[in-house]
Length: 97
Ligand SMILES: [Zn+2]
Image (cartoon, rainbow, N blue to C red; front, top):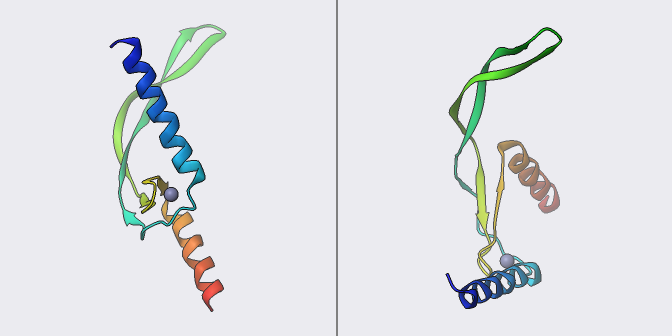
């Protein structure tokens, strides 16, 4: 990649960041969008004598609940877990009550 391409892409990134930070944000309804994370399991003791630590036996993929909402104007996306969505829904309900 030439330096011109890097400069052009950096300009585009800054331009998109500015668009997001200046946006008033109008988000669509959150939709269920489960995520996969790497989780450590088990522990092996490593080292000898007083210089001992623990390392995971391995890692596995774990599905976690996640909701996503996307701004209709700038395309910025936000993610949250179940608990936060419930708090937002309860807050909105209270405001509308
Ligand atoms: Zn926005």
